[in-house]
Length: 108
Image 1 (cartoon, rainbow, N blue to C red):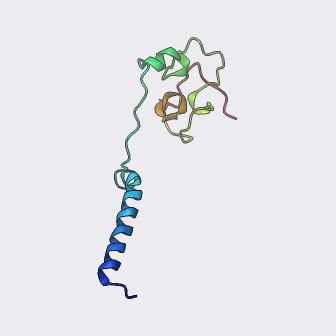
Image 2: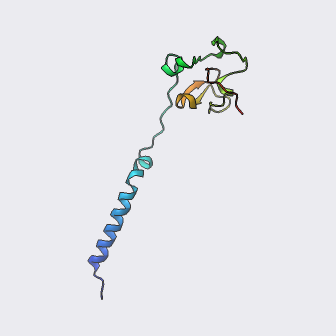
Image 3: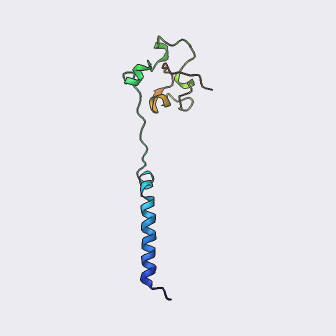
């Protein structure tokens, strides 16, 4: 039995098509991934208001611990020394490092 050149081309086409279809769901993340600037959280945001978020912790009347700031909170994922950083409580929106909210929990 001899293999025709057209059979090899057809097999190659089918294999490449199947690979392309399998990779299609991942193409958007590989090609279209662009860095987006994170949105800064404002005190008027509904979730921020509910958790009594303040950009300046010293102005938060509910804050009982004088050392409680966003930058030493367990939910703050920003880098040390930066003025703002993402908070997992607020969907990774940027909060001020010297801010505070009722969800504050000491970083462990």
